[in-house]
Image 1 (tube, one colour):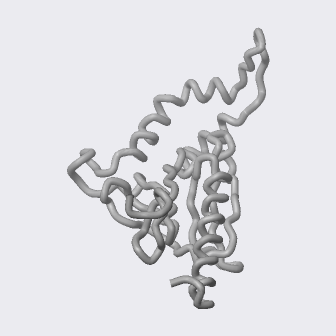
Image 2 (tube, rainbow, N blue to C red):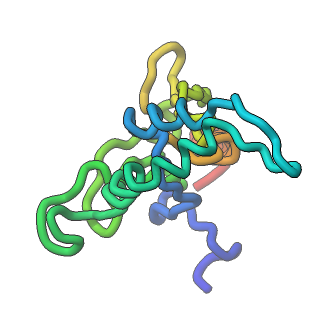
Length: 182
C-alpha cells in the first residue's frame, strides 16, 4: 500500500477515479420518446398486478429498444474491437480532479470539467427519463452551464458524490493557498 488511506491519493500525485456511471437509454431522444410511452398509467389491475398501456408497450417495444441499448455499449463500429470509435458509447467518470465524459476502453475523452470550475449541480428530469429512472446533471459556475451529463441513472447519488468531491477539492485548494497544505 502506497497511501495512508486505501484508495485515497493526493490530487497533486495522480488522478484517481471516485465513481463511474454509464448513461441510460434516457440519454437519447429515441429512448426518451419510448420512455414517455412507457409512463402511460391507463389500465386495469388483475389479481394485484397492474396491466397498463405503458407496461404493455414496454413489452412490445423490446425488439426496437434492444438495438439502441447494444449500440450504446459497443465501443467501436462496425466491429467491437476494430473500426471507428462509437460516439454513442460513453461513460461519465468522477475523479479527484474533474468530471469526465469519455469513451470507455481507451477511446478517449469527449468533455471534462475541473472540480473548481463549477459551484452547483442541478438535476433536470426530461420527459421520458423518469421511467428509466434517470435525469440530466447540469454543472454550473454561477449562471453558466459548464457541463451536462445526459441520462444519468439514479442521478441523485452521483450528484451528491460530485458535490462532496468538489467540496474536498476546493478545501484542499483553499488550505494550500493559505499555506497549510503542501
